[in-house]
Each structure stands twice: as C-alpha cells, then as structure tokens.
Length: 582
Image 1 (cartoon, one colour):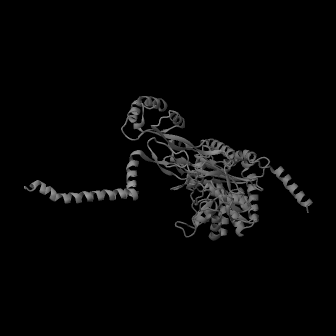
Image 2: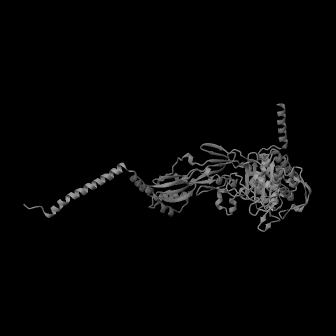
C-alpha cells in the first residue's frame, strides 16, 4: 500500500498550527467584541469625534446684553439682531433657484453665490452681517440647507444723547468701553455659550438659559434734563467759540448725577467712523485740569473748619504775595486794602486765598483738600476715571510755592466730577455723598438698589452755611449773570490760565473757565457745574454764570424746584403746624 504523498504530509503537519492560529484570531475578535459591548466608552468617544468632525460644528452663542435705561425707564441702550448666513451645499435641492432667491434678498453677485451653493464643502459662509429684515426674508424661504447665526448688535435709540455716560460696545467681542458700558461690562454682558450643533441642517437653539442674559441697569440720569443741558452746552461752546465744554448736574442730597454732558460729543451707533480719538474719552472724569480761582471757596471753607480764620477775619490786601520765592498777583494786579474772607471770594483775590492757605499751614491745608476728595477718583461708576493730581509735601517736585498756588487752584489737577462732588458737600450741609450714575441693577434675582452712600463729613453744617452765604454774595456782587428771578443762588465763577511747557498762556482762548452754583442756595436740590475750555472771553465771570443761568432757568421747571416765595410759605406752614401741635 502506497503511503501519503509528500504534499499531504506537509499539510497534515501544518493543520494543528493553522487551527491554533484560527482559534487565537477568533479569541481576539471575541475579546474585542466583548470590549466594544461592555466597555464602549473609548470606542464611542473616538467614533463620535470622527462623526462630529463631519456633521457638527461648534457655535458660540453670545449672551444677550442687559439693557440701559434712564431713571424714568426710558431706553438708552438695547440690542438688535443681525445675522450671518451659511449653507450646507449637499442639502441644496435646486442650486439655480436658491441662487436667484438669495441674490434678490442680499444684492450679492449671482456667480459668487452659485459657486458657494454648489461647493463640495460641508459648510460654506455666504454673507454677514445682514439685517434682521433680510434674515426674516431668508427664513421665509424655508430652505433646510441654509443656516442663520445671530450676531447681536448694540443700538442707542437716543443717538448722541448722553453718549459719554452710556458708552459703546465693541461688537466683535461684545466688550463694553467708555461710560457705563465699560465700567459695568461684567454686569451687562452675561454669559457666552459654546454649543455643538448639527450642520445637517444647521440650526440655532431657540431657548437660552435665563442666567445667560446680562443684567439691566437703570441710571440716575433724567433724559429731559440731559437733553436740555446738552442743548445749552452746545450753544455756549459755539457762542463763545470754545474748544470744548462740560456740564454736570448733581443732586447733592444723594449724589445722583442727573445730567452729564460734553461737547463736542459722538454718536455711539457710529463710533467706528470717528476720526478724532479724543471724542472717545469722557472729559468729565478723564480730563484733569487746573481749576483756578473757583478753588478759593474750598480754601476758605477749610480755613473756617480748622479754626484758622473766622467769618470776621481780615487782612491787608496789597495785590500781591510772595510764597516760596514766587509772586502771586490778584486779577489786574489790583490791591483792595482791608478785606475779609467774603471779599476774597467776591473779588476773586488770589493773594487773599494764598494768605489764608499760608495761615492754615501745609498739614491742615492738604488734609482738608484730601477730605474734599482731590487726588483720588470719586468712584462715580464711569469707565477709566482718573484721580487727578494733588502733590503734598514730600512728593517729588513739590515746593513751598505750591501751597500758595494750590490755594487758588493752580499747580494741581482736578476733574469736573471731583469739583462738583466737593461743592455738593458744601450744599449738603458739609456731608459728602458718593456720586453715582447707576440707580438700580435688575437681574433674575430681582432689583438691586444702589442706595445713597455717605463718604464723610467734610465740614460742619455751620461752616457750610457760612460759606454758602458768602457764595450768595458772590452771585449778587461779583457774578450777577448767574442770578435767577425768584431764586436765591449760591455760586462761584473761576478762571485758570492754561499751563504750557514754558509757562502760562495769556489772552483770548488761553483760559479754562468754570462756574459752580447751587439751586436754591437754601436747601439746594441741584448743583450745576459749567466748564468751558478756551472761550473767547478770558475771565470766567464774563462767560460761565450766564450759561449756568440758561440751564438753571429750565432746570427748576423740569425738577419742580419751588421758588423762594413758595419755599418760604411752606416753611412758615410747617412752623405753624409745629407750634399748633405743641
């Protein structure tokens, strides 16, 4: 019998190895199937990653920014919607028809549209930003291949009104800048969501978490007062050919800023078109300047408070005074002989203010200036507020002459907001209130009230009353342009020459002029600051009191401030009621 052939012998010899290999391969497959079945996490993640790269995209859903209102609920800033448009070419049923529909809505070249619609890409960007009306027309096409992505845009319905108070929003990052938009950006901006969404078809989630929305803000501004102030400021800048101007109206009783205007101003809806970068700054809190002789009021108040002088104090005015090797002169180099503190304010005597500063001494003078808030931000709640500059003994470049010059408002830097806050303390019986621009913050949790805050008592009520009486005489005897029929006004004009690298400028368009007045003088309900840079009249008393008057004439009506006769009758009635009830 013949044995097996050599080939069969080889096959039979290898069969066990083949069988073992097959068994091992089967075992490997079984183990992997079991791993997929019972331990699918890593495999599933990998498959989802691959699938998502083809069918999904990550969409950043911007938060809905909170709104801004004036104190009466009038909208000052809200949101409008624009869109970005994209297409999934694979889902387009009729390229030509879709091309024509979109070209008619968007006014885009048909060739460019067709190229994108017929692309082999998963997703193609078509246009953006497009208006809400265009977006609605596209949505009405009911085309599943198209996707509309919201682009939030900030809109300011009042245009230029209160532009520097409200601020702007940089649309690309939805980041607030300038004014309240910048200072309260975190409060207004809400929370951005990153969502993974399907490209087939592209969609935008309709329901958003309520916590994603930013909080609304109610300002202390009164829109009607703001409008009137801006109108009069513009007229004043143009009439006196000034470089620019600022007006602030504050309620001294609670620190509320009722109006804040700068001119020239800007339109926050068109801020990208602004060529002058200085228009994107708020001079009321970002421009520090030498205030000049208006500071004499605070020097006198400080000296009265520290007991350095009394209301009956006098000195011999020779028209000049040397301090630290530098001579200080009165206006027109005039000497006034025996003069008291009230005369220093009425005649705006620089030598008199410097004399009072010297009698007070550096320690008391600079302590009082710090108490009035100079050299530090007010914390009013506006973007990029600067602290100004108040050098004190021991600081670099401070000299003895600074005490004399600071006494009448030179060689120091203040902001308009600091100045009106200091004068409001005098109007409020010596108590300084924290100035504020935000009245309420409204969110999901309810309304957060910004309650009036006392910073400190700067001077006693007695000192404040004495200084207000002096300021009443200033208006009657030295700045009659600020007189308002039926109302007693306490005020003070001021003039500061403009410092340069080589000294000071003199002559037309070389000064900064200011007026601060309280309406009415007794129980003031509003303090108004008027500031003009480089007017065609050098001295403040010739310019700013009459601008103050124009504003205050209307303000007493808008704020329903009773005149002296009505106020006196009300006071008398209160006295009678108190007497009868005794």
